[in-house]
Length: 496
Image (cartoon, rainbow, N blue to C red):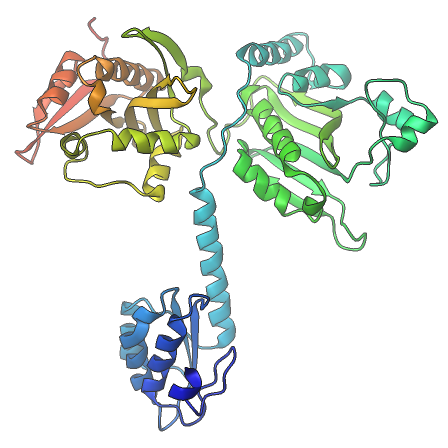
């Protein structure tokens, strides 16, 4: 097609339009290339000629920009006048003076997009820790501090980490099997005495990763992971991560290692996530140093040392606040009220789909359709430091979790005022679920030290206004006559 339409062009990538190119040829090339879905972002590199002056080529790009569905960037050798540059910018076409700058700008766009996609990924569900195990780990750390200890090593550190599902390989086992830092070492089984035959037949680790945690002045607790180079020549691989690590973030760390193709990823993901959970749940841990011995199908921890202290810096990313989970009997059913999690996206989609168009209009102050992945991700992947969304869930007969309702509160940066809203499945209205969730968001905001809880509703939303009034809010007018407001001073004692 290109040969027929542009006989003087030289095919390939890049496509060279030639010295005789005219402004309209640029538009023709964009149209023809756009028909092939494998075409990526279009780079247009132009050197001005009598037949293709800068201004006319720029207008051709603007006219045909819609065909470059994955983006269009332009480079004009010799520059261009301000009016033409502004016209290109107004249409969202970045302009650069050299191909090198164009390529660097494109690389930044790719990094930005990949970062946004990573943020919007729905993580797999975190392993459910046993509350008794968490309580025991916290009690162990506090008892050690009370006894004047500032470091847990050996069996004490191993006991604490085992409570989070980590397998510990003892020094005695490693010594018996002759294991060292080399990847061809052969650790022995923990289950039996080791003979020379056992050591020779024991599985060999693929790599040993040094893991450290330190309390940074700016970021709080920070993990560092160091693995030796795969070729013995390159620099060791060193990566950093902020807890809490979910399986998606852990997978990003694992896949960047040159050893990733040699191991089953799930055990490594589970080990990294478990380490992160131990740090998040036991706030007395201010530092750690250990080795992750990674085999093809499992991971063990070697020689853990935990530094403990009464206090540490706050996490840069607030972990899931498990302390707000609550299970109770309600209307003949056993429900759980808890903070929302990223993996609730599918259930949250079902919640919205179960609401009538009128209920959605009253909740969102206008007609809305279905929500896409990015919108649902913003609802379910929240910053627990500034926002809280409590959901009421019930288990279906098939064992799946179903969301019945949600109450959400978003605080300002100074924690002076938080705005809240409630949404209930249309088939659950009239069963006082809204009041149950509202009482808990009031309790949460008051415990957090928020001074005011406020909200708004359409004047015709009599059910929401009645709920606010019965919960203790003062109903107030707003600048919009179709909307009423309600506010509650959380510093004042609440009359029951």
